[in-house]
Image (cartoon, rainbow, N blue to C red; front, side):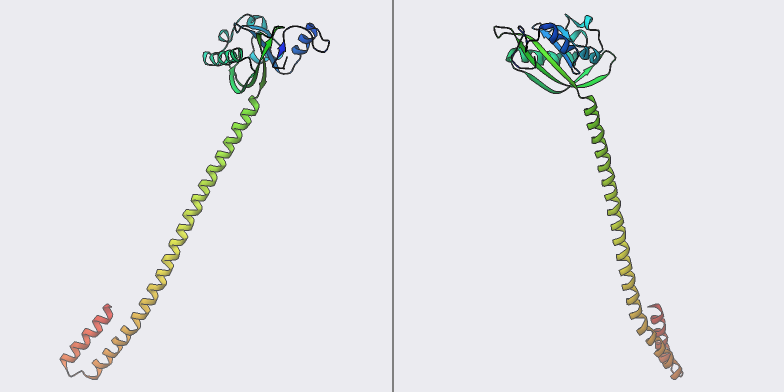
Length: 223
């Protein structure tokens, strides 16, 4: 039945219809069959367990009787695509809300079932529940985003520390330069002040000379 040209009649490797139904019933993956009116005509045990609705209630009804409209509309769209093209349709990921309101992520294959004349009479759906894979992928994405955020934050902290270090280094260089300049100025000013003191002592009898020396001392002290 997984073959894209599966027949509705006959047997497979000597197996009759009841045997095939028993195999489908015990498959781990959910399997369903719809007619051309998109009504459920078969669901195996795994499908009943996944969807959460009793099989007896679903038979003869459509997706719109059980699932949210947006989901049911999407299921119908893909069903019609399969009937119109006559080819299998692969849905890599689609959401489905079960009877309890839990959202599952499914990977579904929809394959045409043909009669002896090659006419597509039914749709056979095989569902793989990939919810755990999707959740694991989302969790991994969250971890990567958090790691990236921490790396960016740490990088910003390092850049700020580097800028602060560079600022301190500039201040240190300026301090050394200022100290050197002050030393270079202080020494000659000290010499001028000392010379003025000596001259003042040597020529105490000239008021003008003493006044001039006082100016030298005051200006040297101010500088």
